Image 1: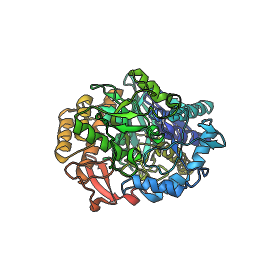
Image 2: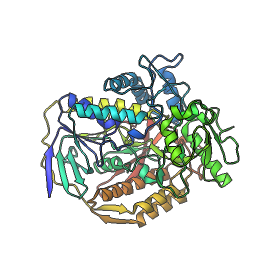
Image 3: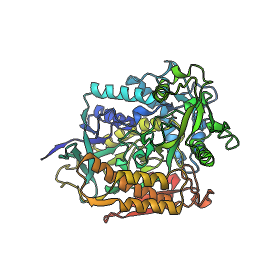
Image 4: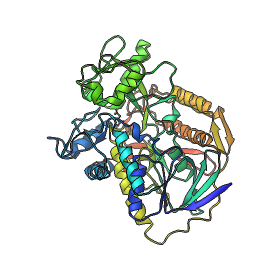
Length: 530
Ligand code: SIN
């Protein structure tokens, strides 16, 4: 059994970028379908804690220029400052639009409260519900989606972006939980699928983060860049030696309010490591924790938030996660260790989400606009999703304003592909492609993924995800193997220094028609498509 329907725009993913784009496109008069493999609430957005980094002009001394400076400094030389400046400048309007949808932030409406996180030189992070910003953003956008009667196709995994003989997009193939295939014929597809945390045994991401957008984009002919830069959040809650899957986040905003990191021997983890100490950029803190854990043979370090006034009331999400493992955030130190958190690279786009493949756009964590470089500045991601999601909708609306391409008449694209056993893949990636990599470990991970793979046509959601993780793992390992230096989130034990040769070079990955990946480089300042 299979079915077919049509739309102007198919949005894959129901997080901040996808819903922002879908709402704007619908209001512009397009027939929009949002496809999600789970329920609409189950994306990464709702788990975001810290907030949205934005300069609204009401914090003395803070400027967009300073925010850009912090973004560039955190990004290890690979931020595209032109793209980043455009996104950051668009922040106030994007946050105003989100508030107009009904999102409520902490503080007085005319002067929102601000938090601070690693790498920020000012208190500029707006937040909601203390540490529940993502949940409020998701709530407001889903409420708007219901008001606008946006069509949402839940429980359908995206299998392939359908393209015509000329390479342009013709629609999307999906499968439901039973493996029943469906086709959405459409001249425009926006990938807003979120992250890649499912490549690793432990991640702050929800279970849906299985690198779907990377794989869909590669198979449709798009280019990935900077995919070796997987950001590990320094402080995921340590819930036990054998725990895998989603680890609750312990927001960096706690350190912004004075919480401190100590190792299991009681010493500061970041003293002498960076002038900003525990509020150094995330890659620096995560690497320092990893080193200390290894030196002491420990399983975690401690985050002591007992000195933060009203900590449980101000950080209720973290307090709840701690309580679940018997830790009182207000009275006890919290066991934390790094976990895979955010993909700084992804599908190459400009700041309108345009991928260069006619009819294919990408926005949010799946995309690589040049904002994050080698290491994302905390809380820049919700902002990017809002801004680029909105711009992508404008771009798509303009692109579809001319004569429409005939969207049907394409055969199903499902083909046999390598599909690895997920547990083996996650183990191999955790050992070989975490914080601290070397050539031998990367090669071993690649061999292990290959040995655990069988070529098959993926039919169920789990098989589709496994196929996507397999392709994404190989893309990441290839990019990480080619970057013979240490920069940002990419720490190479066999190349511990930063190499000027790579100062402005972004790695790129493409897939050829025979299923082979090719790694190259491009100037990071012009990594986005024209
Ligand atoms: C956090 O709250 O620490 C995470 C925020 C982010 O990843 O930007």
